[in-house]
Image (cartoon, rainbow, N blue to C red; front, side, top):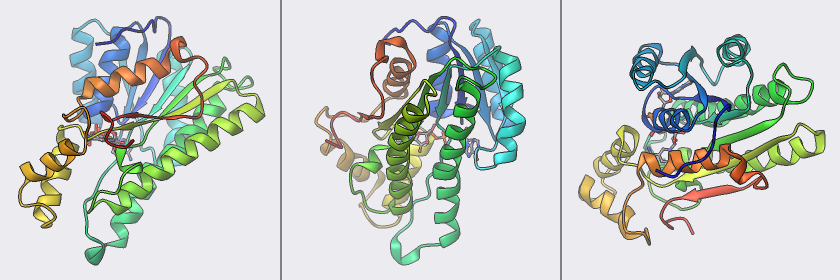
Length: 267
Ligand SMILES: NC(=O)c1ccc[n+]([C@@H]2O[C@H](COP(=O)([O-])OP(=O)(O)OC[C@H]3O[C@@H](n4cnc5c(N)ncnc54)[C@H](O)[C@@H]3O)[C@@H](O)[C@H]2O)c1
């Protein structure tokens, strides 16, 4: 694990109850940050906070539906009272539904856009409002939006997801530009993770095989690996380390980029 100094950092991670967000919470807290996990799944969130507290990490849970503006309004005061401020927001919550164009269910596409795009935009909105000079935290900071290698390549079966993550990439750059013009003192970057064989990544590989795009799940995974110069899938730690870097002062002059953490798959 790479190490950054995050002591004193106050961090909100959406979708942190499991998967990549949980690994980010563990990693950033392990490097000295105080972390709030915000998630729609309160049961998983509470279990994850209990597990991290056992490792003496400063982590707590706030309920949040990222796609709901009123939910953000209600959550931010709880985040501020748990952390005593806010320096870093990681907009990580996201969903994926694999579907061929010929079978496209518009409700699935709308749901993906609602959570991945509108949810991320609301995260930027409330992070700016909270961290800008006149906000209740007021000291600027960093926003990290989780996009995907799917924003940078064309992989069959994931059109809506890929489009949503391309939107996350572009909206992050617009947010960085807007923050600069408005003097918010908030850096905004995106990360494009490669395929991680956790629940979401394994489901995606499985679904593409079930849709007949590959002969088997193993073949789907093999196709990803063969497109990856580093010759392997990503790990949750690979992604969490990149988040820690973009959350830290080590990246103080990095702003408005989409950092690929994909072993070169999307170059
Ligand atoms: N797993 C991969 O291979 C991979 C690759 C590239 C990018 N990503 C992206 O990384 C992020 C995390 O993925 P993951 O693999 O940990 O997925 P995951 O499904 O394991 O976790 C997603 C988390 O988001 C939460 N969530 C879903 N909808 C929400 C909402 N409306 N409000 C608040 N929380 C909500 C879920 O409860 C869950 O805890 C996602 O944005 C995903 O698109 C994942």
